[in-house]
Length: 397
Image (cartoon, rainbow, N blue to C red; front, side, top):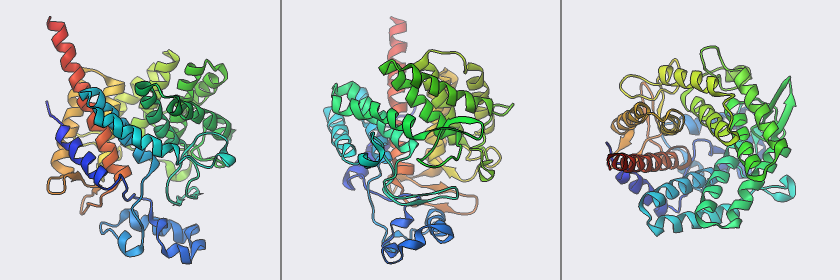
């Protein structure tokens, strides 16, 4: 079995050296050029600018005045990884680092005078095809990963200052993001938008379900079930999910499929229901059959392996180990990790690249998208491996 401790150590050390600040595929609108021309952030020009920085294999950010900054979601992922390492080693330094980062996250909440409850967004203006999101405006995915990190830390420290915002985030998700429109019941991605995206809705449902159980809130439980049933009803006959409902969302990719399955698994576990087992089983079979190759490649799309991306690899680790859980799934995760190390790791830089395409490689160092995900997933794999070894020893006694 592989030992990923060296890889997590390298990534963590670099994160610490840079105070966990870095660049992001979507941070182009942080360019100082837009301080002179802010109105160009929105519309076609802003979208093209974001895509230029995201897709370019040459990092233009220094030239364009895009600073390196901390991303709340990236910090949440690092905290979750630090807690995995702490539980695996019992070394206090990991816990101390997690606490320091969590205290920073508490200061980064989106404006409560507007949103009323704990929530988080990105540190940059974000222009997507479906909507424009100003810096700091909360979104469901960032909020949930931060909330997961704070909740996990509260379990270790018993500190209410982490537990309170984690639970409060579900109130934001319910009161601001729950939608009933176009014949659907779901959780939206951002406030004020009605785009239906499966992974956003399912993760919102999963977190609301968890808080429903923690607080014995039957209304929240019902809303979570409504959203889960909506996505299950729109699952393909073959077990697949397209990304979302809009015309440009009609694609099937690996890590969003993995998100859907992990979220459904968490929701089912929390609510102690077997209602979605058939959907999970079909989706997991599709996932393993259509989104991986025999050599361990984690494909980006169901019909195209490219771009090779560590985001797909990291989510594969969580999906295989949390949804599948069998020795075969564990072995498959190990195979995927080994292949990624061979194809996407740069030993001289001691980090992973962003993406490898068919004809070129993008080696830009992205903290939130790449390194934070790798750190958390590898730390999680390591701890599961340790737990598996301990269980094997106990069975032999």
